[in-house]
Image (cartoon, rainbow, N blue to C red; front, side, top):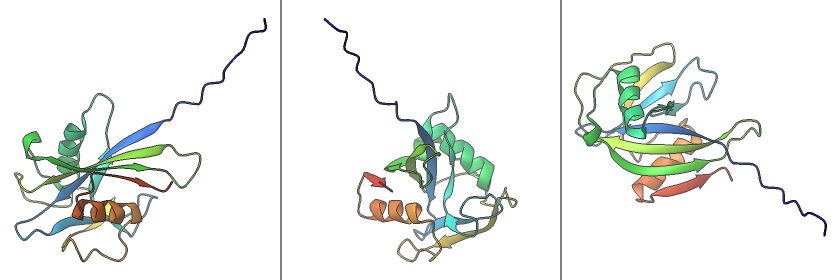
Length: 155
């Protein structure tokens, strides 16, 4: 009897990232305009970054808050609000899993720590996002507004 070989599908590689939805006392969202990064420059996003090896999502959120806007957020102050499985537009780039967490309380004064990557921090009303908000970020924020816990983007 001949041997039968099954070909297994390639394992799907995903890059995890965390996005911080920081809200002030008036319920406005902090947005950052990307600058000089080579990706979506001139468009608005939220404080965000990759989850590094041996780091939890919330630890990454805490690190990014400190690195990008100079604030300290206790891990217990974060709330998971959304997750997005995002297909990258270029085939050679790995797909993403974007975790969105919110926080309303922190220590320190918000300031732009990375002016070489961000040329503006701005508080905006949730229902009046800048027209040049990165599309997947806009989609995730819309899902957060409707309390949809998970979305798939770009498929």
